[in-house]
Image (cartoon, rainbow, N blue to C red; front, side, top):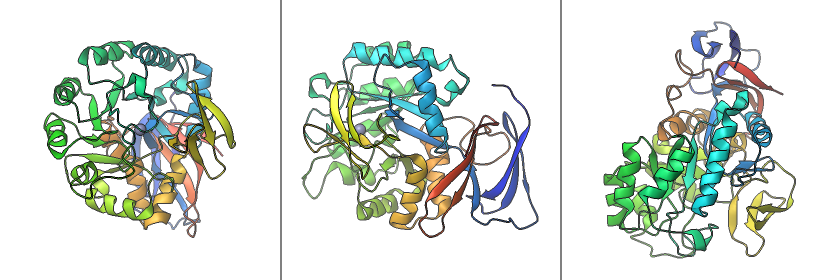
Length: 387
Ligand SMILES: [Zn+2]
Protein backbone atom coordinates (compact mmCIF):
# COMPACT_ATOMS: atom_id res chain seq x y z
CA UNK A 1 0.00 0.00 0.00
CA UNK A 2 1.20 3.56 -0.76
CA UNK A 3 2.70 4.89 2.44
CA UNK A 4 2.31 8.50 3.55
CA UNK A 5 2.45 10.17 6.95
CA UNK A 6 -0.95 10.40 8.62
CA UNK A 7 -2.09 11.39 12.06
CA UNK A 8 -5.23 11.00 14.09
CA UNK A 9 -6.38 12.46 17.40
CA UNK A 10 -8.69 11.26 20.13
CA UNK A 11 -8.82 9.73 23.59
CA UNK A 12 -6.82 6.52 23.87
CA UNK A 13 -9.62 4.12 24.86
CA UNK A 14 -7.19 2.10 26.96
CA UNK A 15 -5.17 4.76 28.80
CA UNK A 16 -7.79 7.53 28.79
CA UNK A 17 -5.18 10.06 27.59
CA UNK A 18 -5.98 12.60 24.90
CA UNK A 19 -3.39 11.74 22.24
CA UNK A 20 -2.20 12.26 18.72
CA UNK A 21 -1.00 9.14 16.89
CA UNK A 22 1.39 9.65 13.99
CA UNK A 23 1.70 6.81 11.51
CA UNK A 24 3.89 5.99 8.56
CA UNK A 25 3.06 2.36 7.93
CA UNK A 26 3.79 1.71 11.59
CA UNK A 27 2.96 4.02 14.49
CA UNK A 28 5.83 6.55 14.68
CA UNK A 29 4.87 8.60 17.66
CA UNK A 30 2.12 8.94 20.25
CA UNK A 31 2.02 12.35 21.91
CA UNK A 32 -0.18 13.64 24.69
CA UNK A 33 -2.33 16.59 23.76
CA UNK A 34 -2.41 19.04 26.65
CA UNK A 35 -5.79 20.59 25.88
CA UNK A 36 -8.99 18.82 26.82
CA UNK A 37 -10.77 17.08 23.93
CA UNK A 38 -13.82 18.88 22.55
CA UNK A 39 -15.72 15.60 22.52
CA UNK A 40 -15.16 13.35 25.51
CA UNK A 41 -16.72 10.38 23.74
CA UNK A 42 -14.37 10.30 20.76
CA UNK A 43 -11.90 7.46 21.14
CA UNK A 44 -8.89 5.84 19.49
CA UNK A 45 -8.06 2.17 19.84
CA UNK A 46 -5.81 -0.36 18.18
CA UNK A 47 -7.70 -1.78 15.18
CA UNK A 48 -9.86 -4.70 16.23
CA UNK A 49 -8.76 -8.23 15.41
CA UNK A 50 -11.16 -11.08 14.65
CA UNK A 51 -9.63 -14.54 15.05
CA UNK A 52 -12.80 -16.31 13.98
CA UNK A 53 -14.88 -15.15 11.04
CA UNK A 54 -16.42 -17.57 8.56
CA UNK A 55 -17.75 -14.95 6.21
CA UNK A 56 -19.22 -11.45 6.24
CA UNK A 57 -21.38 -9.13 4.17
CA UNK A 58 -22.81 -11.91 2.01
CA UNK A 59 -19.38 -13.42 1.28
CA UNK A 60 -18.60 -16.99 2.37
CA UNK A 61 -15.01 -17.92 3.24
CA UNK A 62 -16.02 -21.58 3.07
CA UNK A 63 -16.83 -21.44 -0.62
CA UNK A 64 -13.83 -22.20 -2.86
CA UNK A 65 -15.47 -20.14 -5.64
CA UNK A 66 -15.38 -16.89 -3.64
CA UNK A 67 -13.60 -14.29 -5.78
CA UNK A 68 -10.90 -11.78 -4.80
CA UNK A 69 -13.41 -9.00 -5.42
CA UNK A 70 -15.91 -10.57 -3.02
CA UNK A 71 -13.20 -10.99 -0.41
CA UNK A 72 -12.29 -7.34 -0.81
CA UNK A 73 -15.94 -6.33 -0.32
CA UNK A 74 -16.23 -8.41 2.83
CA UNK A 75 -13.01 -6.92 4.22
CA UNK A 76 -14.28 -3.40 3.50
CA UNK A 77 -17.48 -4.24 5.39
CA UNK A 78 -15.37 -5.33 8.38
CA UNK A 79 -13.08 -2.28 8.23
CA UNK A 80 -16.29 -0.28 8.68
CA UNK A 81 -16.69 -2.17 11.99
CA UNK A 82 -13.16 -1.19 13.08
CA UNK A 83 -11.69 -4.62 12.32
CA UNK A 84 -8.23 -4.40 10.75
CA UNK A 85 -6.94 -7.97 10.93
CA UNK A 86 -8.96 -11.10 10.42
CA UNK A 87 -8.39 -14.84 10.44
CA UNK A 88 -10.82 -16.06 7.76
CA UNK A 89 -12.08 -19.32 9.18
CA UNK A 90 -12.84 -22.55 7.35
CA UNK A 91 -14.81 -25.22 9.13
CA UNK A 92 -15.14 -29.01 8.99
CA UNK A 93 -15.45 -30.34 5.44
CA UNK A 94 -13.78 -32.72 3.04
CA UNK A 95 -10.04 -32.37 2.73
CA UNK A 96 -10.51 -31.33 -0.89
CA UNK A 97 -12.89 -28.52 -0.04
CA UNK A 98 -10.73 -27.22 2.82
CA UNK A 99 -7.66 -27.27 0.58
CA UNK A 100 -9.48 -25.46 -2.23
CA UNK A 101 -10.87 -22.77 0.08
CA UNK A 102 -7.47 -22.05 1.60
CA UNK A 103 -5.71 -22.10 -1.75
CA UNK A 104 -8.28 -19.76 -3.25
CA UNK A 105 -8.11 -17.22 -0.40
CA UNK A 106 -4.30 -17.38 -0.26
CA UNK A 107 -4.08 -16.55 -3.95
CA UNK A 108 -6.72 -13.81 -3.70
CA UNK A 109 -4.93 -12.26 -0.72
CA UNK A 110 -2.12 -11.07 -2.98
CA UNK A 111 -4.47 -9.61 -5.57
CA UNK A 112 -5.77 -6.48 -3.81
CA UNK A 113 -4.17 -3.99 -1.39
CA UNK A 114 -6.57 -4.72 1.49
CA UNK A 115 -5.65 -8.42 1.22
CA UNK A 116 -3.09 -7.90 3.98
CA UNK A 117 -6.00 -7.59 6.42
CA UNK A 118 -6.26 -11.37 6.06
CA UNK A 119 -3.54 -11.96 8.62
CA UNK A 120 -3.77 -15.73 8.57
CA UNK A 121 -6.31 -18.52 8.46
CA UNK A 122 -8.18 -20.38 11.17
CA UNK A 123 -9.03 -24.00 10.45
CA UNK A 124 -11.88 -24.96 12.80
CA UNK A 125 -12.25 -28.71 12.55
CA UNK A 126 -12.48 -31.26 11.03
CA UNK A 127 -10.79 -32.91 14.03
CA UNK A 128 -13.60 -32.11 16.45
CA UNK A 129 -16.04 -34.19 18.45
CA UNK A 130 -18.56 -36.20 16.40
CA UNK A 131 -21.08 -36.00 19.24
CA UNK A 132 -24.30 -33.98 18.92
CA UNK A 133 -23.88 -30.82 20.96
CA UNK A 134 -20.10 -30.45 20.99
CA UNK A 135 -20.11 -30.79 17.20
CA UNK A 136 -22.41 -27.78 16.84
CA UNK A 137 -23.46 -27.21 13.23
CA UNK A 138 -20.38 -28.92 11.71
CA UNK A 139 -21.32 -31.74 9.27
CA UNK A 140 -20.89 -35.16 10.94
CA UNK A 141 -19.80 -36.94 7.75
CA UNK A 142 -16.59 -34.92 7.61
CA UNK A 143 -15.61 -35.09 11.29
CA UNK A 144 -12.45 -37.18 11.78
CA UNK A 145 -9.55 -37.70 14.23
CA UNK A 146 -6.47 -35.44 14.06
CA UNK A 147 -4.14 -36.23 11.19
CA UNK A 148 -0.86 -34.35 10.76
CA UNK A 149 -0.54 -35.27 7.07
CA UNK A 150 -3.89 -33.57 6.43
CA UNK A 151 -2.74 -30.51 8.33
CA UNK A 152 0.51 -30.33 6.34
CA UNK A 153 -1.47 -30.56 3.13
CA UNK A 154 -3.67 -27.60 4.19
CA UNK A 155 -0.71 -25.59 5.43
CA UNK A 156 0.99 -26.07 2.04
CA UNK A 157 -2.17 -24.95 0.22
CA UNK A 158 -2.23 -21.82 2.43
CA UNK A 159 1.47 -21.04 1.90
CA UNK A 160 2.07 -21.33 5.64
CA UNK A 161 -0.73 -18.91 6.51
CA UNK A 162 -2.75 -21.29 8.70
CA UNK A 163 -2.08 -19.63 12.05
CA UNK A 164 -4.78 -21.16 14.23
CA UNK A 165 -6.51 -24.55 14.39
CA UNK A 166 -9.42 -25.65 16.55
CA UNK A 167 -9.47 -29.32 17.49
CA UNK A 168 -11.12 -31.44 20.13
CA UNK A 169 -8.78 -32.69 22.84
CA UNK A 170 -10.74 -35.95 23.09
CA UNK A 171 -8.75 -38.00 20.57
CA UNK A 172 -5.68 -40.12 21.38
CA UNK A 173 -3.98 -38.30 18.49
CA UNK A 174 -4.76 -34.79 19.85
CA UNK A 175 -1.55 -34.18 21.86
CA UNK A 176 0.75 -35.32 19.03
CA UNK A 177 -1.20 -33.25 16.52
CA UNK A 178 -0.94 -30.25 18.85
CA UNK A 179 2.83 -30.64 19.19
CA UNK A 180 3.15 -30.87 15.42
CA UNK A 181 1.25 -27.61 14.87
CA UNK A 182 2.83 -25.68 17.73
CA UNK A 183 6.31 -26.58 16.50
CA UNK A 184 5.43 -24.64 13.32
CA UNK A 185 4.20 -21.64 15.28
CA UNK A 186 0.53 -22.48 14.75
CA UNK A 187 -1.81 -21.78 17.67
CA UNK A 188 -3.89 -24.75 18.78
CA UNK A 189 -7.26 -24.03 20.32
CA UNK A 190 -9.51 -26.55 22.06
CA UNK A 191 -13.12 -26.43 20.95
CA UNK A 192 -16.14 -28.47 19.87
CA UNK A 193 -14.97 -31.00 22.44
CA UNK A 194 -16.25 -33.49 24.98
CA UNK A 195 -12.76 -34.10 26.38
CA UNK A 196 -12.10 -35.19 29.95
CA UNK A 197 -9.90 -33.24 32.36
CA UNK A 198 -6.97 -35.57 31.62
CA UNK A 199 -7.41 -35.19 27.86
CA UNK A 200 -7.56 -31.40 28.13
CA UNK A 201 -4.46 -31.36 30.33
CA UNK A 202 -2.57 -33.59 27.86
CA UNK A 203 -3.44 -31.27 24.99
CA UNK A 204 -2.39 -28.18 26.96
CA UNK A 205 0.84 -29.89 28.02
CA UNK A 206 1.44 -30.48 24.31
CA UNK A 207 1.10 -26.75 23.65
CA UNK A 208 -2.58 -25.84 23.18
CA UNK A 209 -3.08 -22.23 24.31
CA UNK A 210 -6.69 -21.34 23.51
CA UNK A 211 -10.32 -22.36 24.02
CA UNK A 212 -12.60 -21.70 21.05
CA UNK A 213 -15.87 -19.83 21.73
CA UNK A 214 -16.07 -20.83 25.37
CA UNK A 215 -19.54 -21.99 26.37
CA UNK A 216 -20.60 -22.92 22.84
CA UNK A 217 -20.13 -26.13 20.89
CA UNK A 218 -21.20 -28.01 24.01
CA UNK A 219 -23.88 -30.44 25.21
CA UNK A 220 -27.31 -29.08 26.13
CA UNK A 221 -26.98 -31.08 29.36
CA UNK A 222 -23.86 -32.29 31.11
CA UNK A 223 -22.53 -33.46 34.44
CA UNK A 224 -22.54 -30.46 36.80
CA UNK A 225 -18.91 -31.19 37.68
CA UNK A 226 -16.47 -32.17 36.48
CA UNK A 227 -17.04 -31.11 32.89
CA UNK A 228 -15.00 -29.67 30.05
CA UNK A 229 -16.20 -26.11 30.67
CA UNK A 230 -14.87 -25.99 34.24
CA UNK A 231 -11.71 -27.82 33.16
CA UNK A 232 -10.94 -25.20 30.53
CA UNK A 233 -11.99 -22.24 32.66
CA UNK A 234 -9.68 -23.43 35.44
CA UNK A 235 -6.71 -23.93 33.09
CA UNK A 236 -4.65 -20.74 33.26
CA UNK A 237 -2.61 -21.69 30.21
CA UNK A 238 -5.69 -21.31 28.00
CA UNK A 239 -6.92 -17.98 26.62
CA UNK A 240 -10.65 -18.21 25.88
CA UNK A 241 -12.58 -16.61 23.05
CA UNK A 242 -16.17 -15.47 23.50
CA UNK A 243 -19.03 -14.66 21.12
CA UNK A 244 -20.71 -11.70 22.79
CA UNK A 245 -23.87 -11.24 20.73
CA UNK A 246 -26.26 -11.76 23.63
CA UNK A 247 -27.39 -15.00 21.95
CA UNK A 248 -24.50 -17.47 22.18
CA UNK A 249 -23.80 -17.03 25.90
CA UNK A 250 -25.89 -15.39 28.59
CA UNK A 251 -24.74 -12.58 30.85
CA UNK A 252 -24.13 -14.63 33.97
CA UNK A 253 -22.09 -17.30 32.23
CA UNK A 254 -20.08 -14.59 30.51
CA UNK A 255 -19.49 -12.75 33.77
CA UNK A 256 -18.34 -15.90 35.59
CA UNK A 257 -16.22 -17.13 32.70
CA UNK A 258 -14.42 -13.81 32.31
CA UNK A 259 -13.84 -13.60 36.06
CA UNK A 260 -12.37 -17.12 35.92
CA UNK A 261 -10.12 -16.34 32.96
CA UNK A 262 -9.38 -12.74 33.84
CA UNK A 263 -9.65 -10.06 31.17
CA UNK A 264 -6.03 -10.82 30.22
CA UNK A 265 -7.00 -14.33 29.10
CA UNK A 266 -10.19 -13.33 27.30
CA UNK A 267 -10.69 -12.49 23.64
CA UNK A 268 -13.69 -11.33 21.63
CA UNK A 269 -14.48 -13.08 18.35
CA UNK A 270 -17.52 -12.67 16.13
CA UNK A 271 -17.74 -16.20 14.65
CA UNK A 272 -19.68 -14.29 11.97
CA UNK A 273 -21.04 -16.25 9.03
CA UNK A 274 -21.78 -15.08 5.50
CA UNK A 275 -25.16 -13.34 6.18
CA UNK A 276 -23.57 -11.11 8.87
CA UNK A 277 -24.11 -7.50 7.90
CA UNK A 278 -27.01 -8.47 5.57
CA UNK A 279 -30.81 -8.20 5.89
CA UNK A 280 -32.70 -10.94 7.76
CA UNK A 281 -33.88 -13.87 5.64
CA UNK A 282 -32.93 -17.29 4.29
CA UNK A 283 -29.35 -17.89 3.10
CA UNK A 284 -27.42 -20.86 1.83
CA UNK A 285 -23.95 -21.43 3.29
CA UNK A 286 -21.90 -24.21 1.71
CA UNK A 287 -25.00 -26.08 0.59
CA UNK A 288 -26.66 -25.76 4.00
CA UNK A 289 -29.83 -23.72 4.40
CA UNK A 290 -29.71 -21.23 7.26
CA UNK A 291 -31.93 -18.42 8.45
CA UNK A 292 -30.77 -15.02 9.67
CA UNK A 293 -33.50 -13.98 12.12
CA UNK A 294 -34.39 -10.31 12.67
CA UNK A 295 -32.87 -10.35 16.19
CA UNK A 296 -29.50 -11.41 14.73
CA UNK A 297 -29.68 -15.14 15.40
CA UNK A 298 -28.40 -17.47 12.65
CA UNK A 299 -29.84 -20.98 12.79
CA UNK A 300 -29.94 -24.05 10.58
CA UNK A 301 -33.20 -24.07 8.61
CA UNK A 302 -33.65 -27.76 9.45
CA UNK A 303 -33.46 -27.30 13.23
CA UNK A 304 -33.14 -24.49 15.71
CA UNK A 305 -29.41 -25.09 16.16
CA UNK A 306 -27.14 -22.04 16.05
CA UNK A 307 -25.07 -21.94 12.87
CA UNK A 308 -22.67 -19.11 13.65
CA UNK A 309 -23.30 -15.49 14.43
CA UNK A 310 -24.24 -12.29 12.65
CA UNK A 311 -22.19 -10.26 15.10
CA UNK A 312 -20.11 -7.19 14.24
CA UNK A 313 -16.98 -6.59 16.32
CA UNK A 314 -17.84 -2.98 17.17
CA UNK A 315 -21.13 -4.25 18.59
CA UNK A 316 -19.30 -6.99 20.51
CA UNK A 317 -17.12 -4.35 22.21
CA UNK A 318 -20.20 -2.33 23.22
CA UNK A 319 -22.19 -5.46 24.16
CA UNK A 320 -19.69 -6.79 26.67
CA UNK A 321 -19.69 -3.45 28.46
CA UNK A 322 -23.48 -3.30 28.51
CA UNK A 323 -23.90 -6.98 29.45
CA UNK A 324 -21.41 -7.38 32.29
CA UNK A 325 -20.19 -3.89 33.06
CA UNK A 326 -16.65 -4.13 31.77
CA UNK A 327 -14.80 -0.87 31.13
CA UNK A 328 -14.22 0.37 27.59
CA UNK A 329 -10.51 -0.15 28.22
CA UNK A 330 -11.00 -3.85 29.01
CA UNK A 331 -13.46 -4.40 26.17
CA UNK A 332 -11.11 -2.81 23.62
CA UNK A 333 -8.16 -4.76 24.97
CA UNK A 334 -10.06 -8.03 24.54
CA UNK A 335 -10.81 -7.12 20.92
CA UNK A 336 -7.29 -6.00 20.03
CA UNK A 337 -4.16 -6.68 22.11
CA UNK A 338 -5.44 -9.90 23.67
CA UNK A 339 -6.53 -11.20 20.29
CA UNK A 340 -3.07 -10.37 18.92
CA UNK A 341 -1.44 -12.23 21.81
CA UNK A 342 -3.76 -15.23 21.44
CA UNK A 343 -3.24 -15.37 17.67
CA UNK A 344 0.49 -14.49 17.96
CA UNK A 345 0.09 -11.55 15.60
CA UNK A 346 3.35 -9.61 15.53
CA UNK A 347 3.55 -5.83 16.11
CA UNK A 348 0.00 -5.71 17.43
CA UNK A 349 0.45 -6.82 21.02
CA UNK A 350 1.37 -3.54 22.77
CA UNK A 351 -1.52 -1.20 21.97
CA UNK A 352 -1.08 2.34 20.66
CA UNK A 353 2.73 2.46 20.90
CA UNK A 354 5.50 3.47 18.50
CA UNK A 355 6.66 0.50 16.43
CA UNK A 356 3.27 -1.18 16.40
CA UNK A 357 1.52 -1.47 13.04
CA UNK A 358 -0.54 1.58 12.13
CA UNK A 359 -3.84 -0.22 12.67
CA UNK A 360 -6.12 2.25 14.44
CA UNK A 361 -9.85 2.74 14.81
CA UNK A 362 -11.47 6.04 15.73
CA UNK A 363 -14.97 5.79 17.15
CA UNK A 364 -17.55 7.49 19.26
CA UNK A 365 -19.51 5.77 21.98
CA UNK A 366 -22.92 6.51 23.40
CA UNK A 367 -22.18 6.64 27.15
CA UNK A 368 -25.67 5.37 27.98
CA UNK A 369 -26.22 2.44 25.57
CA UNK A 370 -22.48 1.71 24.99
CA UNK A 371 -23.25 1.58 21.28
CA UNK A 372 -20.09 2.23 19.27
CA UNK A 373 -20.04 4.15 16.00
CA UNK A 374 -16.88 3.63 13.96
CA UNK A 375 -15.73 6.90 12.35
CA UNK A 376 -12.39 6.06 10.77
CA UNK A 377 -10.25 2.97 10.33
CA UNK A 378 -6.53 2.88 9.51
CA UNK A 379 -4.71 -0.18 8.19
CA UNK A 380 -0.90 -0.04 8.25
CA UNK A 381 -1.10 3.75 8.60
CA UNK A 382 -3.50 4.33 5.72
CA UNK A 383 -7.06 5.49 6.17
CA UNK A 384 -9.17 2.71 4.68
CA UNK A 385 -12.58 3.67 6.06
CA UNK A 386 -14.26 6.99 6.86
CA UNK A 387 -17.91 7.25 7.89
ZN1 LIG B 1 -17.42 -23.33 16.23
